Image (cartoon, rainbow, N blue to C red; front, side, top):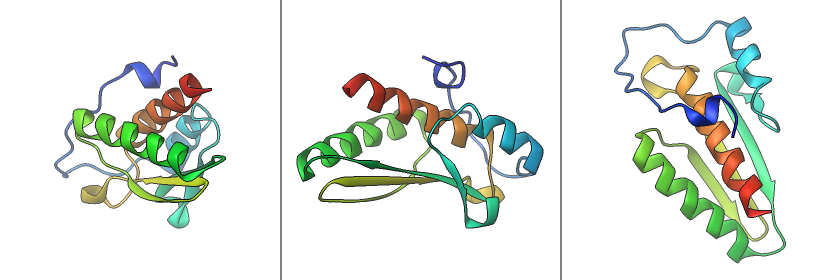
Length: 113
């Protein structure tokens, strides 16, 4: 498990700035497979599967982690794919929590292989 995946999301109630592009880029390097979205205000990753059941299984596991971390991705899924988009709504941009969740999602998927 990577350094980010071992961290816990911290509540973000606003009043802080989103990460700078340089800081976000440095954290993105630690979250393999993720890319910037929404003009750099979010990150996303699409996972592919051989069937609907496998996609749903990852979505359900991510849902459990999102609840325990208090940080919830936008999720789109269907037959053979699941896509997750992360950003911190209250600051309208990226926070370390987004990269922590991305790392936790990666760890889930890696453990399923």
